[in-house]
Length: 323
Length: 291
Image 1 (cartoon, each protein chain N blue to C red):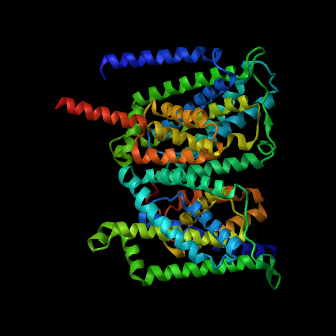
Image 2 (cartoon, chains in turn brown, yellow):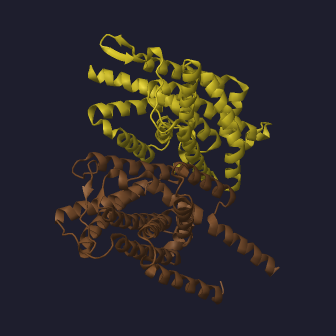
Image 3 (cartoon, one colour):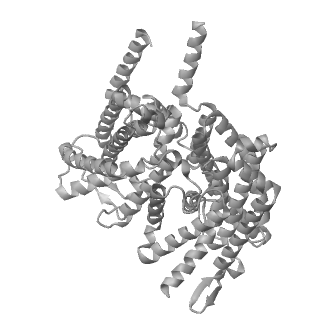
């Protein structure tokens, strides 16, 4: 990439950031919520992408980390008896929930990452199923009846604006983390694992460590989003955070944007949410069909996602010019 | 006595699981595709039996052949078009996502057509039961178990003794060698997929009289099929029977002695443990590529 497109791209990002920073002042609360949802799902897809996109280990069970983050924060904030109305009260529960998710992910990482391909995918689905049933049925956790979270929104601030900025900041953080990983030694190691794990191992890439590190990091980022999402709901039961569709959406958004790229998950989320929430918000009863149809068409027409499709086109044009 | 009764219930449930999984197992073994549409084909079979029962008064057991034939056609065309395109243009893993997308579409269509409500088929013998000594079993469960065993035996005979069965097994072992010997592997793939769909439809018609169903139950059946295959091994009716019976026993024993709400968790714990400690299946014939 030459210097000019790069500068253009950076300028574009800066403009987007500026628009994002002032947007809630100009649009309706409903649209603020829609953009907030976009921030959250783009964050989830990007976090999933660190494991699924870079190392090729497609997890179908990341909803488990999301739910654990939410219920971990709820448990801790109840135990602390935090007062409502102060954003600082969020810090300790969210940090604690992050720690819980990190420990859990580290514990299951070694055994479960020995599985590959479809088997890893289904085993993770199993993990999320087990977590869901435990949260639902162990009365101490309280997923069955539901738990209340004290609202940390300071007086005088509209809640959707408050969470808009938190999810926006988290999305920014996750993109930066993704970017840093992609450019680091570990990122190249993960790509090597995706292309051919046995060869990578043979060439001296510490595959086991890299896989575990990206698994835990990916899970932790999802867990943080889950904890904040729990706060934004105020009241939640098992069904509101441990949803199968949350885990599947992460994958679908990545596929549509372009798996394993930095901006693909964000772009995919934007496209899908625009189609389903804005264009077709009036056709709720055929949402499933539309989502399924888009997924099938994408795989058949652009198997490497929108970004991969255009990158490939650019590459072909570049080669033709070089001739 | 309670323990024996639990075992009997588990065995009856296991027969159903085995039949529900055998088509999935066949497609997985021969084409290498994890067919996430399997569960929705099964539910479609249940709805097919429901239609025939409500409008024509045909007994669900007699509706097995027509339902199976229709689904064979659907499966055949589906493999020749969408599945084939996905595998040749993208990858085998992409077929996982494509079948998932198709499952969503069909599920939505079924919801629009029949509504999202839970349905049952209740022929005249629904509420009778049979008693041996002190063990009691519902007549429908007994019939379902019997029909499952009949279909599994027919399938075994088909795979063992017919030219079609032999070519399926040959293709499963070595697609390239099979095509060098003059088999049309592409057509065979489509026929195998059709057979898998037909088996799903047949089990759906049988399951319709035993258990309530709705479009949303499809995901559970697909996952059950996967667990059965992991437990019993890929591609053989005997393996499906073993896996199915084990799964049925795990299910009823957990429900009886731990908690009814923990059955899914127990099934998945067994699945993860199997993949980790005995990835080749209990019979030692499958899952070599799981790691």
